Structure formats: structure tokens, C-alpha cells
Length: 223
Length: 151
Image 1 (spheres, rainbow over the protein chains, first blue to last red):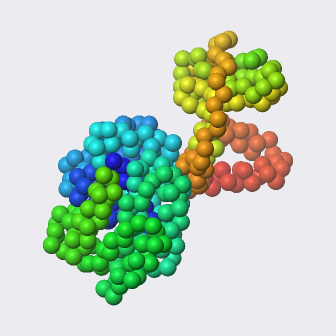
Image 2: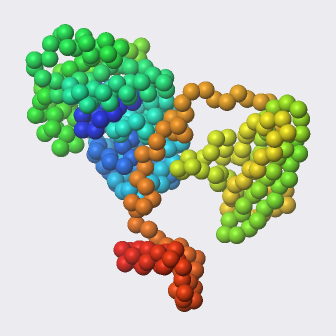
């Protein structure tokens, strides 16, 4: 299964969501944000090298961290040298070897979002309740539909405590899929800064509970 | 299917093929590289043009259409660089192509530190020595000087 985690707007928590979902689903997380990668880095071949044809996707996967990861390079020259036409085959190769792949997509509606969506079986959209973020998430929803990636769930990140069931239902109607609220929680940032997903470092945190509900949604949609 | 193929050799080999569909119906054509090296297809924004693959080109020609097809390869030239054959006409792929139809997210080339190729530097030196430059040549010289300072 290939799962694309996307959402349109930057800074809504796509990387954090992808990292935690990969930990819960025992998947490889691929850092697909070619120009502005956020997930932990590592020495050795990375996704830039894979997309430039210098390394195979499987050999670039690291297994020594808390989550198996295909890291992304940080240089602009490396991002420039990527052949985006290789993304689909690279993700398929990781899926063949490891079974489950979670792709952390960049912001925007561009080829680095489209290629993972085209390769993916399903997507998780990440948004905050802010109108600008919701609008971008809905545009991404349309792109996912066009490219054949079904919506597994929407992660409504940094949801306020006063979000009612009624407001969740209106989100579900707009997106046409289940919405899981991820509450604001300081443990998420603390864990992320140490390069560990919160679901592993603080399984008792409220956000961890929410990420487990999100992962359960993804698993039930995959069946 | 008529065709004519030639090669010229500079730093790399350029293969030029002209194919003509002499039938009164649409026909598919496959051009397969026979030279001993990779196919470097024409690209837009770094993405190969439609119809190109690692082995060559496939496309559909209208009745009577002539189409020029060219690519580069690091292999040495040969008098018989390609195989051209008619193929079953395939309908164009439907829907959005995620890479070709969506914007390119990669940083622009100008955002990277530029290296001026040696041949360009030699030409600029010639222009500088000759004197009496045009406005465009002066602008190119100034830009090259700035690039040298940056790197």
C-alpha cells in the first residue's frame, strides 16, 4: 500500500502526520518534499540521489531510526537535478520490498504532489481549521480524485477543543470522507524536535490517541 | 513509412530522423535507438517530451504528416542509428499526467550557483578582446563578470 500524505498549505502538520502514521502502520516514510524537506536526514544516498538515477530507492531506505525512512537531501542543486518522472517507479520499488509506504508530500499543487498521488492507493489530507488551509486541502482533494487516489481520511490538525460534532460533520460533507481531529498538544513538537514520533515517545499523549484513530481509519479504508 | 536518419558528432552525438506517413490513414511509428548509448530525449522543464522512453520514441502520424524527431546520445555516431517501424496505433493516454501537466516544483536554475562553461568563457574573452561590442554583448560580459565574482 502506498499512502500519500498531502494537504496543499504549508505548515499544517503534513510531515508530523506522515511520520506518526508510518510509525503506527509499520511503514517506510518517504520524504517527498524535494526542495524543503522536514523529516530527519541521514548520511548516504537520499531521495535526490534516487530521482537523479544515482541510487536505487530500496538501498536509500534507512532502518536504524525509530521509523524506517527514505530521507531527502537538503540542497537546491540536488532538488534541481531530480527527474520527477522517476517518483512513481521509486515508490513502487519501496512498496515491493517493504509492503507499506507513507509519502510526505510537499505543499502546493505541483508534480511532486501529483506523482505520489498517481502512485498512491489512498491519501490522507492534512489541514487546520483555518479557512486558507481548508481551501487548499479541498483543491488537493480534487487533484487526488483526478489522479485516482481515494481519500482514506482527513486529519484536522490543531483542532480546538470547542470543535463540535456538527462542525466535523460539515467537514466530512465537504471532503467526502472521514475526519479525525488531532488536538493541539505540546508533546508533538517536543517529540518531533528529537526526531521521534510522538506515538512512540509519548503513547499516552492525547495527540497519540488521535493518530491511532487516524491510522485505524487508514487501515479500514485499505481493506 | 518512409524515413531518413543522420547523425552529427560534437561533444555528444545528435541523431536526426525524419519520418513520413505516406499512407492515407493515421499510423503509429516507433523509432528505436540502435547506437550503443543512452537516449537523451528532448525535455521541457526537465521532463521528457511525450512519446519518449529509454529506448526511443513512439508517436502517431496523421495521413501525409512528416515529423522531425531528434535526440542526443553519448554513443559514437553510425550510419544506421535507428530502427523505424510502424506500430499498432495506440490512443493517447487519458486524464492528467501528474508530471507533465502539473507545475514543476524544483528550484529554478538561476537559484543555483552558476558555472560558466569553458566554451562560453572562451567566446566571451574573444568578444572582450575584439572591442566595439553591441549592447547585448556588453550585457553578457557584465553578467559573466558578476558570476565569476560570486563563485
